[in-house]
Image 1 (spheres, rainbow, N blue to C red):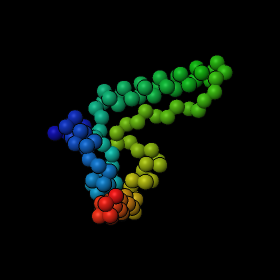
Image 2: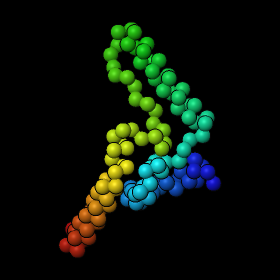
Image 3: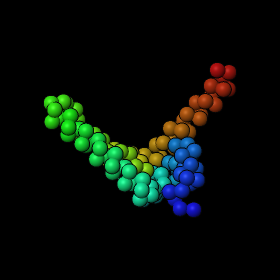
Image 4: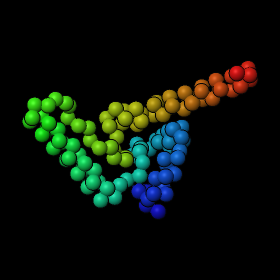
Length: 113
């Protein structure tokens, strides 16, 4: 099955962040979800173009506002996301925080809270 198939994308979407972080460890090129088909990429481009045209028309008529963000695409990370997800220490931090959360939940359960 291709990575952009609905089944594989659904499986990845059902994973919790810890599982995704464990899978992402050491795989810089495979961070994110399944790729899109050509038609879906073209649709994303059309959405971006439409947003830019609306922004330009609004500015031309005296309106204000910042330039619109790009329509999110699976597998394409913003620079902020890339900085957080690709560094191995970030993945380790996610795993460390999840372990701390689980330990805290166990302590609360043991205390009867």
